[in-house]
Every structure is written in C-alpha cells, then in structure tokens.
Length: 103
Image 1 (cartoon, rainbow, N blue to C red):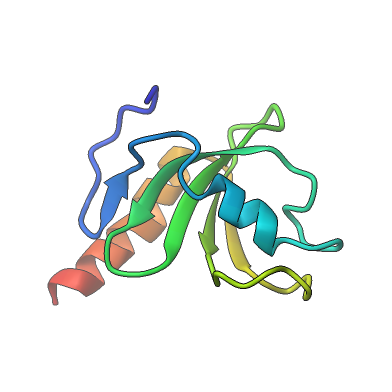
Image 2 (tube, rainbow, N blue to C red; image 1 turned 60 degrees about the vertical axis):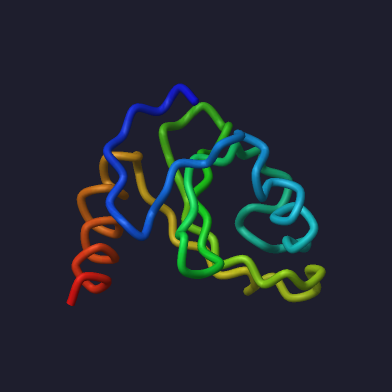
C-alpha cells in the first residue's frame, strides 16, 4: 500500500486496498454520507468490525466505518466518523483506541 504509517494495536494495515470495500458499498443506502463515494481500504481493527477507508474524492479525508454486515436500508448505518486526514485519525482515534486497548 502507498500509506506509510506506524499502526498502533488494535489497528492493522489492510493487505489489499479493496478489503471491505464491497461490503461497505453493500451496506450504504441512499442518504448515507458515503453513498456514491469511491473509497479504498487503508486499515482495520483486529478486534472488531471497524475499518478505515480513504475517500477518493480529491481530498485527504479518511473515514472510520463500523461495518454491520447487513444490507443497507437505513442511511444512519453503518456508523461513520470522518477525519480531515490520515494524520488526524492517527493522532486522535488510533491513539485513543490503542490507549483503551492496553488498559
């Protein structure tokens, strides 16, 4: 992958940029913030169903998605948290998840 990052457990680099993308597209429905947006997989949490995707919309934004493994019918699911950049994700969410994991 093109992303050079020191991943903190429980986050792990995705082995393939398409990991989880088809599942995400299956889960988002009309009205969801990611509906119609192209993404690529960056990382995933080893201990649960959270995945990190880069938005392919010309920005540097990334999004954490809690995959539900259910077909999309509600625009509120799957839950998503947007970050302005990979660095913003790493310095906030990834650090917090790691600190919570090691406690």
